Image (tube, rainbow, N blue to C red; front, side, top):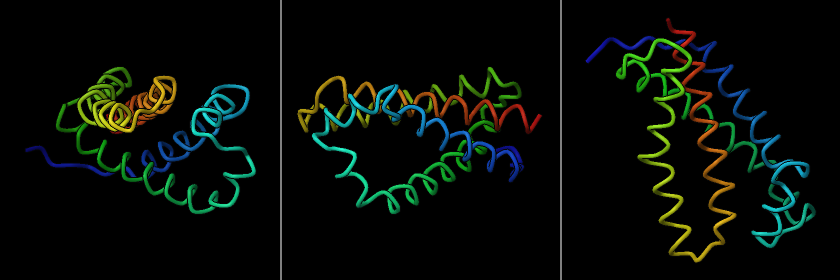
Length: 136
């Protein structure tokens, strides 16, 4: 098992990029209106839990970046493209399968499954790319 280097600046950048991506992805001009419709909520409904939601989102993005640091190095990914590929594999093996399984059993609309899993795919790919390129 290789020695792992933690680049805290890369992790911070990945967290900021992840949060920005989420803000854009779920904005009304992209998927926000459709997403809210599919979950049966309005902007007013979502405001009450927004602070806690953002706290969890930041913590989640931090954990993704920290764990991706290990995975990228174990995969010996040293370029942005290799880091993105690593993120895509992690997404496919763990996140996509979990979201799909839950979505099917919860009888969620396919559009909701696609919106949520697509955001995670991009987040993991960008995080992997950032981590790999900054560590090399």
